[in-house]
Image 1: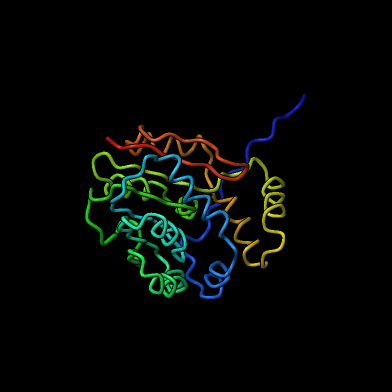
Image 2: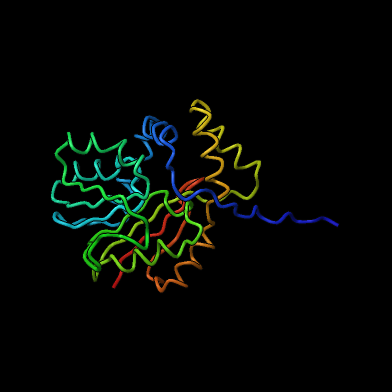
Length: 226
């Protein structure tokens, strides 16, 4: 009898990158290509974007994505949020030097110092897999979004097996520092599947959002909230 192996179960990881060395390694790594790809995905999936908009980026890390988005869309007013002060400190200088309309906030989901139902775009990249309770993110999305807001949440997708996860790390991070390779592998193990995210959205009362795989290691949830 042939036995079918069960898919790899999720292994949660620490929610915050509070270690200064870890944050610095992340900030100094070359994420230009995937960060730019996220900005372009926002422009494609949520088109047409308004010229003027209030935008929130949840889990912004060193704020490279909100900075890129602001420079391409100068009419956007962006609140960039991360729970790690070390991460925000890594990006604060670049944000200040750019003169971009980006405000940095050190806060955790559930304790956001932001006005409810006031954002036209609600964005998040690579935050979901850090959360022990994914509903924290979807609750924040629902509470921050204005009527008719557009939402895009992108994250890693959990591979089927540990071997597949290791292969992805070697394919995309072979030349990165060991700390980043370890983090990447842990993040793949902590990520959710498309089916799990779809169930999360149903439980959160966000059925208007679509979910799909966007690469061999990413998934995306997007749509308009009415």
